Image (cartoon, rainbow, N blue to C red; front, side, top):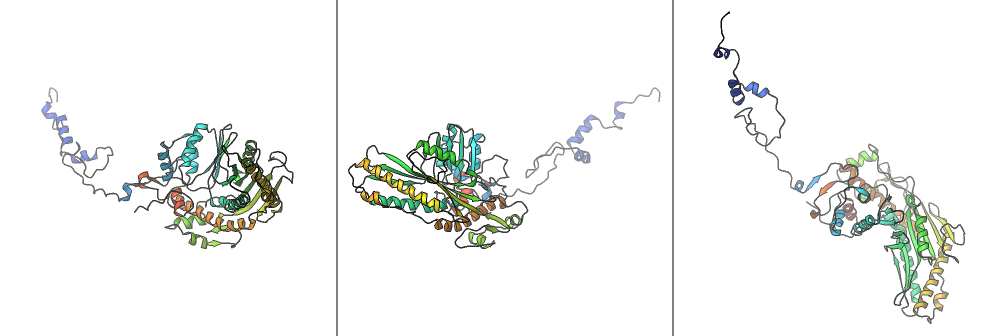
Amino acid sequence: MPGTTISRHSSDSCSPSPAVLKKRYRGDLDKVAALKRPTRPRPRPATRPVTSQGKGLRKESPPARAPPPQAQKVKTAQPPAVGKIQSNYFLCEAARLVGCDLPARGQRHKVLQFISRVNREEDFAAFYSISLEEYNWLFRIIEALPEKPRLAYYSNQRKLIVEMPGGVHETVMNVIRPAFEDVARMLQRLIPGKLIVSQSHPNLTIKAEDLTFVPDFVHAINSCTDPPSVTMPVWGEITASQSETEIPQRLKNIVRAFPDTVMIFTGSIQENPPYSSPTSYSQAWQVLRSEPSIRSQLQFLSARTGERSLDRPAEVVVEGHCWCQLSAVKFQVWIRGSEPIDIDTTDPQLTAKGTLFPHQEMDSVTAIIERGLSLMKDRYVDISLITNPGANLDALRAVQIPLPFRWDDIIFNFTYSTQLMAYDRYAKWYDAVANGAQSQALQVVDPSDGPAMYTRSRTSARRGLGGGLLRVGRRK
């Protein structure tokens, strides 16, 4: 109406004043409007505190459950990203003893990642661009481990070879090494007095030009003089099929550094096809992964299908998956002629190759080894004369040394070591996959509590497959 004025008081009846709106938001005047306002998600404590949206509104949440006692010490880890080192008690303990931290990246990290792998399909790896400082650091760490990988480091090429120990690998040396020790004792009995000292070393670190490595076998003789005169006449290397390409280079370094070497032998253990763990959703994956606990060795090997033998190795197939299949075992031997050993020679008087398995053709290898043993005996004579030039060594010179072991003994041992290897692979696969950690770390453990329940070293120690540390009691 013209001339009509609307007072401020009359406008309050049409719309709320700012003061009223403020009271509504602070109190209960308009609960619906207050509850409809969008709110940010916030953590849910046991009791929600009073907010400006609703004075006096309190929402009770169910009390949080106390974590189980074990969860306070051991936390289940999610499958780690690629490149993460497995949580391994022995690896952490080795770093603590050496007084250093485990690296999170770089070449040292890659080497330790390979060493700590749980579900292992390869026992051999080559790493490049490794500095001498990095090699020395890795060597200190590995020396503190109960299960020591074998390292071969070429300083000029900055190349590091890592070979993991295995029962099948030791099968050959467990026959040959004692045989050489028996020969050494027999030869020393033919020497009057204490003129020499001989030893067969399974873990001796050798420097051969730019190569630093630990051979599988080296026989050393030294005179009983001050200083002693030392010779290393016999060397042996046992290889897996994937490391065969590196072995000739290693042997050539040995010959250049020790030209008085009289015999070198190598053994090659081959699996064809190479081992691989069960693929996802295969029969073995579905059956074995769903089992609530790991099978015992007897249960696992009793479930084998296919050919079996008590004196020859056969493939180990359980739940349709091949866990170990030895395809071939081959040997080669070299001896010294008038010149140092030539690794590239094809002269049948100086080298021989033979197959031990699946069919045995070892006559030429046997003949060359026996000639090599005669040359080793001559080294005993030479070193004895250094100690006592007038010693009567006629009996030593006249002795003939036949092959001191039987090839069939190696084959027989493979019959059972392949079964143990198969079970070891199954146990590590079960620990890694069936327990929920896809091929890597399984638990994050406080090192002061002892080994993790499902680390590689713990499971190996539980089955007695190596490891010098005493087993820590199972946590309850």
